[in-house]
Image 1 (spheres, one colour):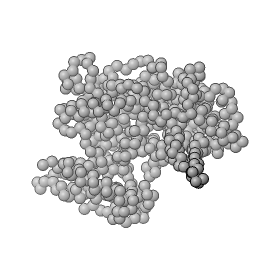
Image 2 (cartoon, rainbow, N blue to C red):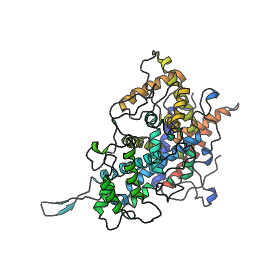
Image 3 (cartoon, rainbow, N blue to C red):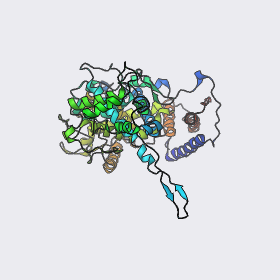
Image 4 (cartoon, one colour):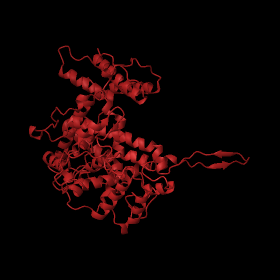
Length: 529
């Protein structure tokens, strides 16, 4: 009889769901007292998970040690993704940015046949508010391209940390390794790994806020704060609201960046609050003008399409592409622009960020075990990539199987891609024998077919199930069973004791998370027996 079975998992899921719902709505009384001592308040995630003191799990020969990501990098990656999730929610709910973009309630009055008047609900408000996130991405793309161009030729891992919005675009760029190689193979950024340690130092994992060490610099200022204070701080008070709104809506569109006369108008409207620091709005416009004049990142003025009032929330190029590529092209596609590609790439990451926030592994009691297993499974996933032709009997030159990762493998894969363009390319060629692209534009139908084939190949190669439950309960149970098997005695394994420990630990972690979300004092942990 297996130690973990379907019935055990289902019971854990039902109880866990009921417990968390009860904690959140206050219907389930918490068995914990309030922790009053600051030094004893729970620290979740634990600090030790961010220490890079364990060799990466490769599952391959010792010569490959250090090629794959480690637990600390994956943990910081989860922190970063949760920070982006919270940032997006703040922007979508911000009343200040609503005012900056002139997003107002538009209620209609209807008169009944008896002469009575009713005010109808504005059903378009939420849709119009969703345009704020694409606008933030537009500005972030401009700032990233300018930052990338300003990197010195000898730039290395010790570069000055860019602001959060630039990091967001850089991150999405790295997660499209073929596009990154095509545009950046001759640039300094190609050899620079994503600065995980510096990012971790800026994140407050109590509320997932990001605090840059240089918040007053004009090029490193907080873009969210800039949008919130658009009219109130950086635009002259004599400028009408309609003009201030139009400057934000059209001056920084990736398809309609400002002409010289628009830039002059903008310069007359900005308010030089501090003469010692360049106005960030004017700096943004200058960035856009310089990029258009010096690079092919942005469309030329004579080929610009008509400017839409708002950009679509999601823009995905048609046509699936294979996740694997044996040859890396050397020329960029002339029919598109890097700015638009980056804009779409950041938007496509919304789905993965939402999934990571839903699972919330960064708050899980089994965080370290979950990440360790995800790296081990990613190593096996790369083995499947290498052995695909041998397993399926395909001849050389035939189209290979599109292998689709599970969520935990995808996290490790994303973290690996963030090791830098050159490092990732060399690692995949070493481990797989060819460059492995990560294409997040593939349609659901192709993903379903690839997932079924990957599941079949995984069973054939490794003799285990490919898809596993990744909830807190199941991951904690797996942690405990692994530890029990490793330390098993002649008396065997007591699953009742394991179940009790899992329930106590997961219950406490859920109570802490519920207290955080309800903005209440954190509970005191009970000693586990």
